[in-house]
Amino acid sequence: MTNRPLSPHLGVYKWGPHMLVSILHRITGDGLALVGMVVLVWWLGALAYGGSAYETFAWAAGTPIGYLVLIGISWAFFNHLCSGIRHFVLDIGAGFELHENRRFSVATLVAGILLTAAFWAAKVLL
Image 1 (cartoon, rainbow, N blue to C red):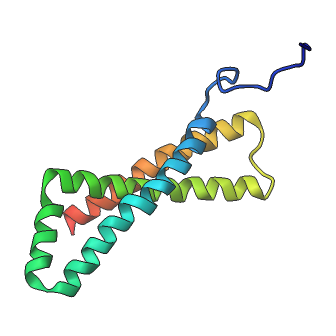
Image 2: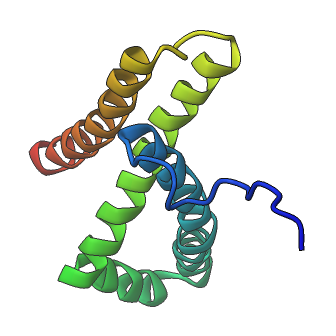
């Protein structure tokens, strides 16, 4: 057996916000595609079937679990949006310096939370 070097593994790398943002970008994209699509199809189906079906959808969306799902979908949307903007900036060749990348990653996470809070605050106030 030869002593060839091993490829780096996840345990070798030091975790940072840039890794969290990258992983969350994938998770939120999948979540939007799966959960968001189910809710969207249910909503559109309820609209198509009439008042009674829509009342059932509105009731389910108004329960605590319904709100949790809707808030989760909106957070996934805003987080994925902010992360996509971050990836776009990285794709044009900016933001690769370690401190700048770390700040941008943290700003992405904070912006996703703030945009979600602002969205739901506007829904409650309006």
